[in-house]
Picture 1: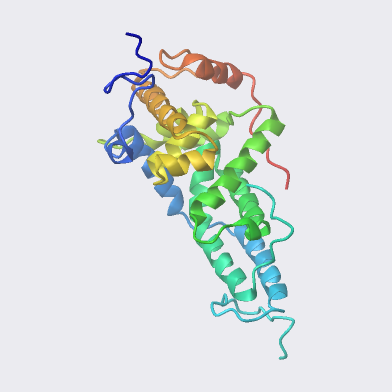
Picture 2 (picture 1 turned 120 degrees about the horizontal axis):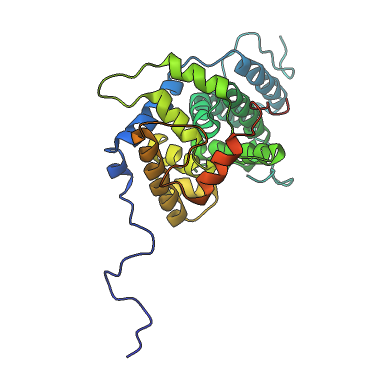
Length: 84
Length: 207
């Protein structure tokens, strides 16, 4: 009999990797997580502020169509569409 | 991540403000992902800033309700890969930075030396680094990581498995010569190790 499909339990070509939950027990993965978390905990460098300012400027332009309920509170941002 | 479709209207002011808040909240994760991906803190911040700006420009192409962090990570990794192609290499290696890392974090009893681990991470093919960081550190599922990396779920699993084996071998090796051959690396690692010997210090991406 020529069986085309592998029977149940046939080993896969690639080793079966345990799911992410099992990964968490691996010291290597724990080390990678600590590396990652150490960056998360760093203060955001000032260079990022320049990009946020550009975004603010875009936001100001978008304010020609007001109606947002969740405005970003950044002092000094005056929407051009608004009367002061 | 495709360019925004021309027919898609821009976000209104409220949506844009909300989007901007989510971008700001994503900055630390973008920095951490970039650091693991390229192995160089200054380059990582350049990548993260570029990803931030690109994500804002592409805000119309974000599908509301989908994983925002994964969307920004996709932008970052796509930019990094295209940057690497421009540099004609995918292994970023700066011996001076590596040396600083080695002295900046002394080994602690009971813990892996993080600097050693970071150095080991840099010896992996970039696809394995990416898979390991996304799944092992970034908290993404295999499925999400596959979507970010643009590959099959099985490919992500395979990359994670091979990356773990190579990293473990690296960490357990008594000596870690830069150009040395390691038993479990395979062709890709051998190629990267060969490349390391002729790399210039990491170049910066275009401003």
